[in-house]
Amino acid sequence: MGRVREPGRAPVTAVIAAKDAGEHIASCVASVVSWAAEVLVVENDSIDDTVRLAGEAGATVFSHPFRTIGAQRNVAIARARHDWILVLDADERCTPELATEVRSIVESPAGPAAYRIPRRNYFLGREVMHGEWAGDRPVRLFRRPLRYDERPVHEHVLTDGPVGVLRASLLHYPYTSLDQYFEKLGRYSGWWAEQNFGRGRRVSAPSVLARPLVRFLTTYLLRGGFLDGAHGLVLAVLSAVSVAAKYARLWAMGREGGHPR
Image (tube, rainbow, N blue to C red; front, side, top):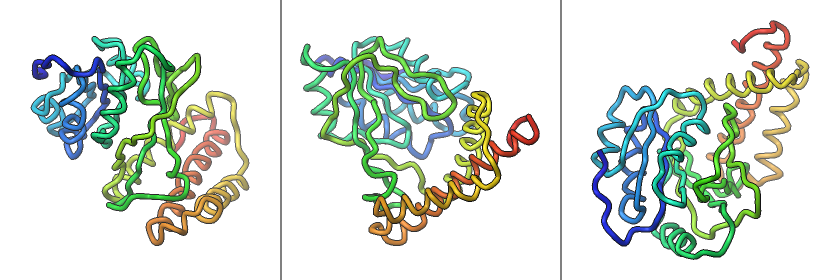
C-alpha cells in the first residue's frame, strides 16, 4: 500500500517498472514521492526486497507478468489516476530542478502533450560527458492517453504531435559494476536479435566484425569518448562488444533459423 497523498501535489503519476531493483528503488521513489500526486511501481518476479522497499518509500506497488518494458509501463499507465505521466527507471532519480519544471508544465493548459527529458548518465561512479551516452533525451513526460510501443528493445512513446524538451535532467545510474553490464547485455542482445530476425533482417559474417569496429571509432573518436579518459575508453569498448553480441546472435539465427544462442 502506498501512503495517502497530501493536497497540493502536482497532478502527475510517476510510473516505475522494476525487477530486483532493491539497490535503487527506494531512492528512485523518494525522488518523486514528495511532489507527485501518485507513484506506481509495477514489478515482475522480484526475489529481492524491491516490493517492500518501494512500498515503504511511499509507492503503490503491484505485480504484473513481464512481456516487454513498454508493456509493463503501459499496464501502469492504464492504472494512473492523473492526467500527466512521468516515467522513470528504477536506476534514475528526479532532481529538485526537474520536479519544479515538471510542475510548471503540468499546471499550464498550453504546450505539447509530450516532453523529452535529458539524462545525466553515470558509469562506475563517474558522469559520462561525451560519446554515445551524451545528448540522451528520451520522452518521459506525457499526457495519459499516450502509450509506449511494446517492442522488446528500443521502446518509445507513440506521439502524434510536437514534442517539447525540458531543461532540467534526470540522473541515471545504469551500471554500478561490470557484472550488471554483462548480465543486461546477455538479455538485450538476445531480444534485439529475435526482434530483428522476426522482421526479416539478416546479416553477413563480415558485418559482425565491421559494425563493432565502426561503433568503437564513432563513440571514442567522432563523439569524443576519449575526453572521458579511462571511463570513455572502457565504454567505447563495451559499446563495440554490445554491437558484436547483437549482430553475432542475429547472424547465428540466420544460419540456424532458430533462437540466438
